[in-house]
Amino acid sequence: MLSEPRSGRLTSWGNALFSGLVSPDDAVLAIVGDDAVHRVEGLPGEPAPVGLTLALGRLRATGLRIALPTPGHPLGLSGPPEFNARALEAGEAVVGHGTALGLVPRVWEAGPEGDVHVEVVWHCLPVREAPPADVPSLGEAERELAEALREATEVLTRLDVAGSGPVAEAAIDAYRARAEPGRQVLAPGYPPRAVRVLELAQRVGALVSLARANGHGGAVSASEMAARGEALRPVERTARRAQVAAYNSVVEERERGVG
Image 1: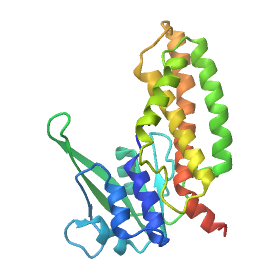
Image 2 (image 1 turned 30 degrees about the horizontal axis):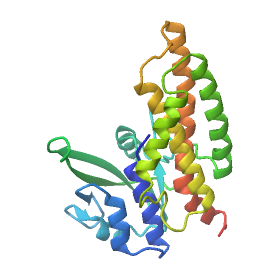
Image 3 (image 1 turned 180 degrees about the vertical axis):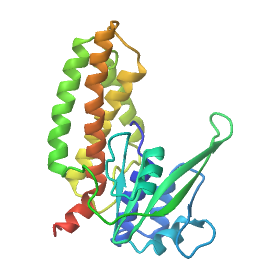
Image 4 (image 1 turned 90 degrees about the vertical axis):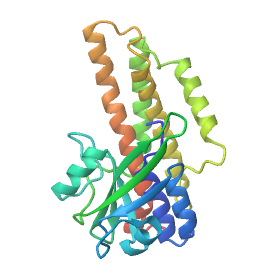
């Protein structure tokens, strides 16, 4: 969770585009990022894949939401089963608001290390227009994240798990320092609280990633390793829920008549 999901960029900058806050060219440039090209396949009325600019204009959505599902947790999804299955396989998706269409990315990488060519094809599929599953409000997400971070740090430190103390803090700070130059966490139009929640969710996700990547630390017994896994799972779930809450906040506030 150290990197921004592609569905997050599409949701964020797509919402800014639909609100008239950025131009189509700027939105597409931000969505594509360091990838070589993005195309959309299966758009109604288009027999072949089309570019993002055309696709965003043809979606006729009033907004976009992100979904970050995992097995047993259909976070942000609303059906039908075919779309949910594709989204679960990809681990992410974008769901249209005001249109019964959604987008699921498929990524192709080619080339040697350091010169990887990345192409993304977004598969356009029908979605059910219904409330997304298990998405908290920004306030709920912020409270849950703060509590999850405290609990996870206490448990992982007690188990002497690598990535739970000063080393993790240094690594997270270094990651943020690398990301900050020219980095915009969310596109124009998002409330400051959404930016704060997303940054905290990324920080919590970084802690989880570091704890997993750095091995078992002092958790050498089976019971300690099980406790470590139990500590990480709900924290990661909380971070994913908070990410979805942040990206979806523009649409959720519009539905409540805020702003």
